[in-house]
Image (cartoon, rainbow, N blue to C red; front, side, top):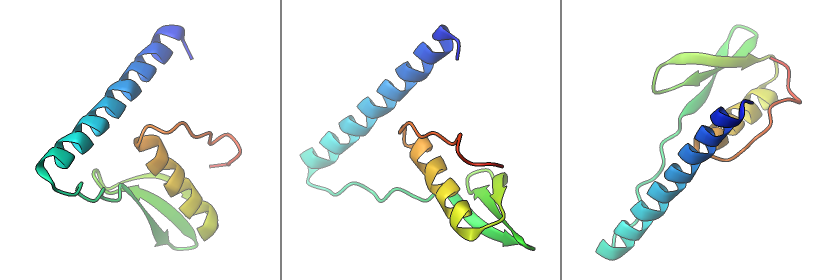
Amino acid sequence: MHPSIQQRVEGVAALHARSTIATAAFYALIGQELPVQKIRYQVVTKGNAYHIVELATDKVVGFRWEWKKAVNFAQQMEARADGIKVSLSGERK
């Protein structure tokens, strides 16, 4: 990845972490519990394949032929959306 793009990605991840911490601190100040994080990706059976659908846009972001691999892919996409670095290089699309 180009260094300027990598720097931008790291900056956005840092801002996301700061916003998460600030939100948690705010809820602690008012004595409320944090709202539950909604699921972003869902595994849907389509014929003999399993599609991973982004619920916000209702678009298919990938598919797998085995249910377990589809669930793992959806969990990895969730982790990436939360700002956690996850490698998908070991999987085939």
